Amino acid sequence: MFKLVTHNRHKFEEIRKIVPDLEMLDMEYPEIQADTLEEVVEFSLNYLSDRIDGDFIIDDSGLFIEALNGFPGVYSAYVFRTIGNDGILALLRGVENRRAYFKTVIGIRFQGVNYKLVGICHGIIAEEPRGTNGFGYDPIFIPEGFEKTFAEMSTEEKNRISHRGKAVRKLAAFMDRFYPR
Ligand code: IMP
Image (tube, rainbow, N blue to C red; front, side, top):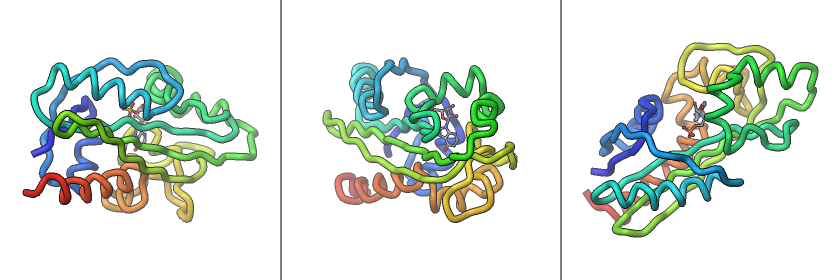
């Protein structure tokens, strides 16, 4: 069984709906400052490999807003903690271009080797927060082709189209191939 190293139970629940053979290892780890999620994940995989026995996975995600040149991007966790959804909406007040995307990079440590799987979901930033499901930026993100925010969707609905859902379906394929149950 793979271990998901995370402090975020919501991520675990979303991922487990697609990959049931998963155990949550509740552990915080440092995230370096870098320009891409891939670099952050690479560092974290190496850092954790010295502290965890065997195979494990991590999920690093971010929200990239076009009108803000990709901000908050790799700083999404810090920005959420500091200014939150209301702060993002304030930055975008009066801004017509509301395009944004979520990106997830799943990092896999498998038999001493690092792998990365990516999922992206395009959409727009809502005018005001809506919905109570999900977590983080879900109440202000409307995926392309929908009227609802992620926070107005069930976990199953979100998983079908989300950045994480896409990356995790690649993870499921990886596991079937390299990790026969
Ligand atoms: P991290 O992957 O835990 O570093 O997440 C970065 C930030 O983005 C955190 O504030 C999360 O709450 C937020 N976040 C990550 N994934 C999602 C998502 O699927 N929906 C909404 N917010 C997310």
